[in-house]
Length: 470
Image (cartoon, rainbow, N blue to C red; front, side, top):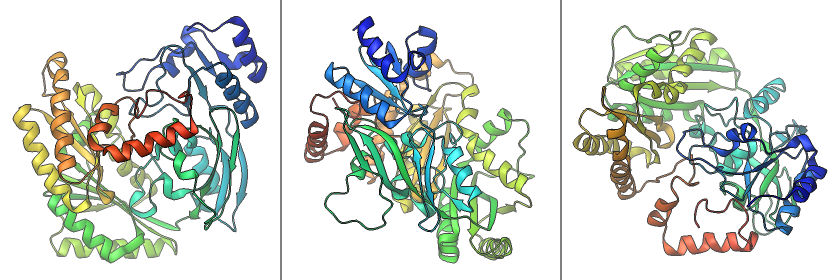
């Protein structure tokens, strides 16, 4: 649909003319997903600067039966924020204020458009930690993290976004504001409504405010890169470190050699931590709330025992903050480092942790049988069972011949994950990308319950329609 000049003027009267975008060059960022697989066609992007403005925008859209696609940082991987023709985008990118911070209660209230890295910086200034951290932390926003229930690298110790949210403020589809900005640890007064919106991918309402849970800032942090023989050895190392360190083990990432080679070729400033290559690696982070000396002592004791027990082939313990940052960069640069090597088939899956080695063995066999020469880049958060099982085309292969294989490979990998009691979407959500798959992995009862919630909160079906399910 084409929006009338009168309707556009009404939106402009709410947020200001310069915050209603309609030129093609202004819309490109909001219309297309960041993997280049889905392309939207919205004609208007509305940028409210406050909850009151967001409420008025939503009420006007509801009155005129206009579908709304909420966006935050628009960094998702499941095309959950891609709009269709006739829909408008409402983005919280102008809503970036710190509303309140309560250090005694370890809670902070922020606008939903605050960039995650800014939230980290504010917490750090007050000697606190907001533990949810993603590779996209410099551009993703907390409202989007809430909408997708973002995971990241610290889930092992601190849980995902859902575990770190105390309260929400949400504009409902008809413009009403639900003020759930409570910073309580215990509240048993009926349904805990915030959990409906966490992970809902903008299909139930627009998140405008968030109360996050803060943690004590670690006083010491050690990062180690570990050479390994296999995922089975990685699992044995993980179990040893969990037993020796408990909550002090804050990250455990696994990666094979192939994506490390891609990363080293992609970013010249990074170096291989070891003089010789190993088949597999783990990146381990150990933190202490007591002191830097305590973190170092814990790390040296636990990792030393791992070497003595033949749970690792080699260990490089960072000796400075710069080295710690470089080791993390080896892991966090892996997603973009795949791009120069051709087409990739990507999976975001989760498994019971003890079955991760079995999955690698079985999935690799399936892939190599279907795609001889494929380069498997199965890295991820082994500490919580979330693997980004990505497959890069064979060297020298034509992308147009490899790309059509993605449907066959996706079906094989997802069938294996389901058979092993896993999830076909660990932290990226459903969006458009996995909508058809959801009907295969959810029971009719589960789907009916989800659709009933959607119908109750969004009876006109105007919130992010076509995402998660039709």
